[in-house]
Length: 96
Image 1 (tube, rainbow, N blue to C red):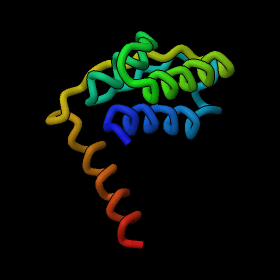
Image 2 (cartoon, rainbow, N blue to C red):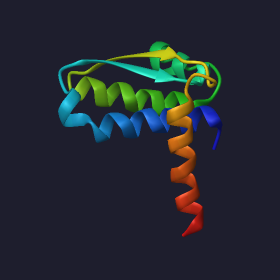
Image 3 (cartoon, rainbow, N blue to C red):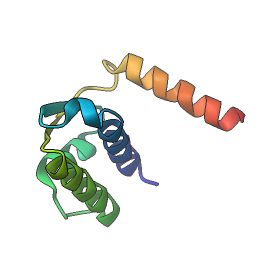
């Protein structure tokens, strides 16, 4: 799966996980993948159909939960803690 698609899935799963807490709210997602930021904010159908489909699912979820979402770019070198935690998670998946 493309890195962009994986990042979009992470956004989607994060929204679903915190769903009851963020329903009816405005949510800012900080993402270190500028392409994923573009898909979340613009819902562009240019490029990857997979990414467009995931972004469309995110928008549908937000609409159903009265949630407004906006993604902002955060450089990877600043996103140290989240990057570290995701790598630990991946290591636990591959170890089992």
